[in-house]
Amino acid sequence: MADYTTEVLIIGTGPAGSAAAALLSGYGISNMVVNRYRWLANTPRAHITNQRTMEVLRDLGREVEDEAYMFATHQDLMGENIFCESIAGEEIGRMKAWGTHPLSRAEHQMSSPTKMNDLPQTFMEPLLFKTACQRGTEARMSTEYLGHVQDETGVTTTCKDRLSGREFTIRSKYLIGADGGRSLVAEHAGLPFEGKMGVGGSMNIHFRADLSKYVAHRPSVLYWVMQPGADVGGIGMGLVRMVRPWNEWLIVWGYDINAPEPEVTPEFATNVARQLIGVPDLEIDLISASVWTVNNYYATRTSNGRVYCMGDAIHRHPPSNGLGSNTSIQDAFNLAWKLAMVLKGQAGEKLLDSYDAERAPVAKQIVTRANQSIAETGPIFAALGMAEGVSPEQMQTNLEARTEGTPEAEAQREAIRKAIAFKKYEFDAHGVEMNQRYRSEAVLTDGQLEPDFQLDADLHYQPTTWPGARLPHAWLYRHDNGAGVSTLDLCGKGRFTLLTGLGGEAWARAATQVAADLGIDLVTHVIGPRQTYADHSGDWARISEIRDNGCILVRPDHHVAWRATSAHEAPEAEIARVLRSVLAL
Ligand code: FDA
Image (cartoon, rainbow, N blue to C red; front, side):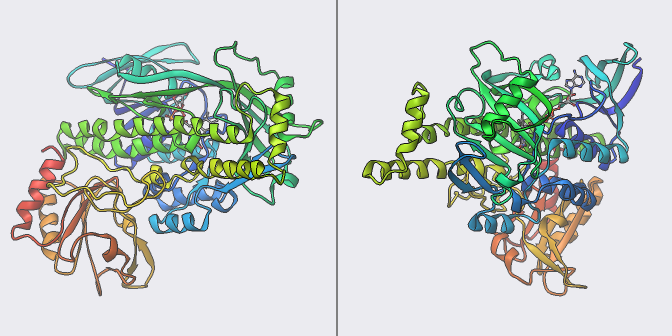
């Protein structure tokens, strides 16, 4: 007999665990979350928060989304991605990043009702955790996961209360391992991994110093410092990262993973900060310093039986592209509704298999992308004449050469420009963030062909309602007051949604009837003139890829489950076939 029981036990209160807890509580599922430490993230690791993550927060509630914006640094202050000799020294180049280039900004605005922003993990975690606890999650801090055993009906997990030293057990129907990059849950569940841990060494130096006079006129979250040694280990270049504008910073500086791990004393940390900022007597208020390793490692299976892992537990990679916390929160959004529906008896257990089918490819994609981004800094160093093995004196000479009026210098300037522009694959990769199209048994294409990407799929998001893709955003307008409402706002909140148009009322009636028969939550919307929502701008008609009398069935995580391009003679039978298939009933 276990000491405690809950439906879902979550190990870890990071972005993955806290998001899973908040979502499950919102769906009315009892859950408990444990963290070995007494509190949440004590360093502002993750910060770039992309639109897809903000859509998850918006789904949690407008008050959650609004609070995130309140604490975040606005997108307008994120984008002058600077490459320089040092913060106070000469600037070498820059590129507009994170959706701040006017063309990229237009794509962002057309893709989502939300905005990318910079929300340090020290704000994101408390927001998600508070939301979870307010909505019913039982949280136990200073509680360490030790091990678990599972059987046909549930999982018994042993934890240790670190305050008293007492060990106790928790019985749950499912266990979520959201316990980060050294996940014991993933290890105990025997998840298979590919890749390598520890491919590079890096350190974080977190400090306060007012650098306004060097940066406020060229606002950015990232200032990249090209100095000898900056391409060793780490994330490709020396980084001075804004935590709060413009007086709190995090330096990321690499070390050779094959050399002994450096001891980052306050003196050492202060010297690195002075060197990268380029002010020899700069006074810094050091907050913390720590070392970490760059990993290139992902799970090829994300679950085993009743144990599901998410976040860094299944994808371990460098912070390049800012994908870690974002993907962790999105993992939770994928799994939580499935667990809820299975636990409520509204779906068959097989629905849970789709978590692995849908998220394991994403884990591989983002780990590969982030590591590739590190490698893609090489051409900048090469163009500057700063490649590995060149002496510091020669590097300085090569760097100076670009300022001359010779054809060689002109060619060098061109090479530098090209190498920097290519970094949009790290700093403005909207497609990487938004283009996920799921293939699994929780999606039904009925043989419809996947649309090709018209533009580079890493750089540009391409809306489609092809089943498996995220429902495209378009602004609709309320009939009663003309207020704009996103198509995404009509969906989510743990429910299925059926969208149709005038002439498609039979789909709506059929879906309501089938949902009642199956006992599931489903809402329907007929979009058109004099309906609750109208498509006055025509944006929805342009991207919906169905006729007005067709329909789109959307899962609670905003991904399209199925669509019919036009009317059907037996809509009720069709919807019943589809829902039974998607929900593994
Ligand atoms: P996370 O590691 O955050 O949380 C794990 C949780 O499990 C913690 O609560 C821990 O205490 C708990 N735990 C572990 N073992 C336990 C045990 N045995 N018992 C009980 N509890 C246990 N990402 C991003 O999206 N955008 C960005 O801009 C950046 N930037 C960035 C910069 C730097 C310098 C770093 C190092 C990292 C980033 N990241 C990032 C990555 C991001 O920080 C990371 O991907 C997320 O924190 C992962 O969230 P998880 O919830 O999966 O794990």
